[in-house]
Length: 106
Image (cartoon, rainbow, N blue to C red; front, side, top):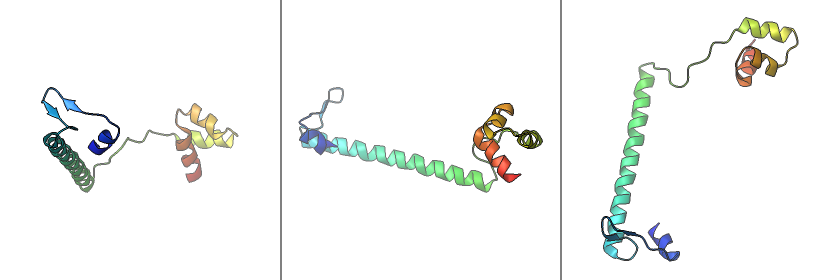
């Protein structure tokens, strides 16, 4: 990123920390160290989340949004009466995809 800024003729100075990131070797080194620490923190967070998800799965925790109840008998009756899947979805207050999968499973 620093090379790209230099190529574009853009300088970056942090006045609060008094660091010239693009104009001095010390500033570039500090920026590189801060970027490495940020990448380490990001990777650590990702690793912890994945570990937590694995533990939850082993404990049998069901992840994701809970399934909404669907009255399959009503869907079957409406389909038998000739209603379209979109109409059925509106009538039973469900998404088109949920109704479509339910009809295929019938």
